[in-house]
Image (cartoon, rainbow, N blue to C red; front, side, top):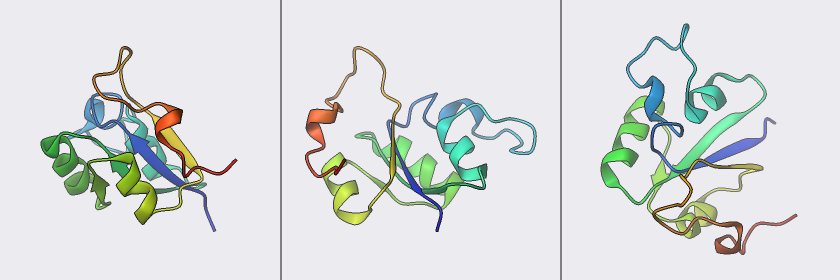
Length: 102
């Protein structure tokens, strides 16, 4: 079984840089990289913006969630990518993820 990945933040680096580009030629986002990597399964993503979530779901056929808590209730990722800017516009720090087991 391949480790599952959860992307937190669906801005440019999370999903946007390569949306609409040929996946055989362009891998600029975390979502694209995990979706194509044979060693991982892209499980889901998190973003407070419904437009970003919809674009991710349409591009990758994976669910997305408005909160980290909702995502962790629905999925058990082995890898969590923090793709939020610094300073981040919403709280996505490790302290917000009490369900994560070491």
